[in-house]
Each structure stands twice: as C-alpha cells, then as structure tokens.
Length: 84
Image (cartoon, rainbow, N blue to C red; front, top):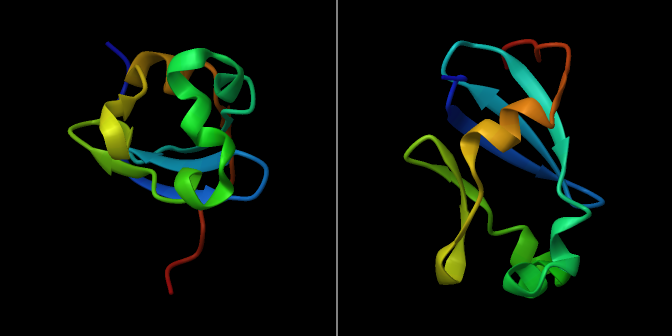
C-alpha cells in the first residue's frame, strides 16, 4: 500500500502539491482528468481550486475524488518546503 495524502495545495495548471503521510512531498498534474466526463467540473479553475485532502486522498465538491494510489504513483517527488 502506498502512502496516503495528508495535505494538498492547489497550484496553477491543474497541478497539486501533495504531502503524504510518510512525509514525502510530491507534485501531480491532473490535466488529463477534466477530459473524462465524471471530472468535467474540474475544468473550471475556481472549482479545481476547492480540492482538499480528506481521508487519505484528494476530494472536490460533488463527490469527485481520486484514487490515492494513482495520486502517489503518477506524481513526482519535489523538494520539501522549508518551515514557515
């Protein structure tokens, strides 16, 4: 089982910066998903910006969610951010 999403931050271009429960930080592009009918609402940047971490994955209003394993496997590692 892959790590689960603990935090998410919406970036431009349908990209999410994710922090997983193992402490790793990764970035994933969800660009292809708005072309799938179930995800059409994500085409609206304001709607996409409402994505959040919940129960180990990323969810958006209206019951849109993503498989946490897909988020992990399709993402790329990023440098951890320095504490504020």
